[in-house]
Length: 182
Image 1 (cartoon, rainbow, N blue to C red):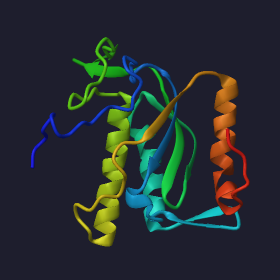
Image 2: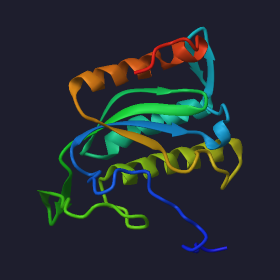
Image 3: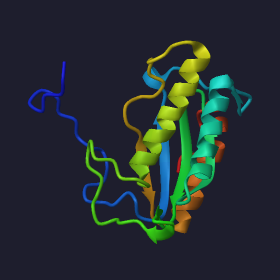
Image 4: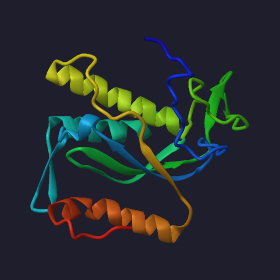
């Protein structure tokens, strides 16, 4: 069955009109398909990553190594989700042997990915993890992630510090549910 706009009402959860390729810090949460504990377990407030969790962490690090406009801040691979802060810097592209600032005058639309934008980078991360996890467990084509992801545009240093604390304390909170929230 193909996409029918009269029956399938996929709405974007992104901030309407916001350019997700512009420099800034973004807090991401990406959940596993059906919230399955695929990436490990929490033991005494610490995450013990499975092989699949190690794949997710490895692909997160590769994300920044492959892209000149991506810097990574704190992150944590939880049993059934992933939290991380991604910082987008100026987006540059190589054109004719010269580096130039990429155009950012068009916002990303469904089905029209933009090189260097947050949605495109997250899509590539999810695809790379999915491919490697499915190869490891012998389940080609099986979903690893839920559709979409949660993002929050970090607006100032105080908020960034609070989110960093939330991420680093997330395993402790999972072990002791009375933990902090940002």
